[in-house]
Length: 255
Image 1: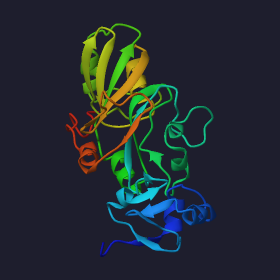
Image 2 (image 1 turned 120 degrees about the horizontal axis):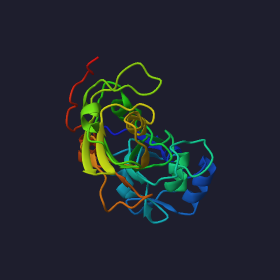
Image 3 (image 1 turned 90 degrees about the vertical axis):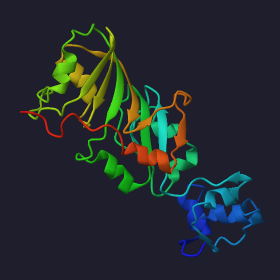
């Protein structure tokens, strides 16, 4: 444990959302907090923030929540909003209630619009978040789109051209990849994150998206076993895979 930072027990658990310092003091008095099987009754005790702390620290007999620096993947259901403040169902409502009180706060890495489902990343690691959403990152994001009208056959060339402009925007899009799955279904891979981009691209091509589902970010794919509304912590290898993936067709569009 040598070299690991230390933090007072009450501050640690308050930051993890378990309650106020007074509430945590009462939890400790009742013997509800244990470390390596031993009850911790002194909330002023400093605890080493080691990588295995969550496995050794227990609250009411259950392993403590992960320390700050977590990254989650969620299978976002349609109808949930990526916001802390808007009315209606929020993606944060799908997490344990105390996770809404964590410090630093958990935020989505970018957004999926309310009616888009699929792979959503969330984190309290600001540096990791900014690496993903940086305009220079060009991390591929793959979506499955169900369309109102049958595909005409030229959409792949239009999307890959680097010349497509969205309504109201002067700057053309980076080249994107389209794979036809059926006359009314296609997979599209984007390398930037403009507002409602996939929906607006199909609109520019004379079609309308009826349903949109994100299946991957970088080299990380949404597993079939993760049900809508479910979430899972990413391990080190999975986090690294988010930053990997195929390179875009071109880093700059042709104008």
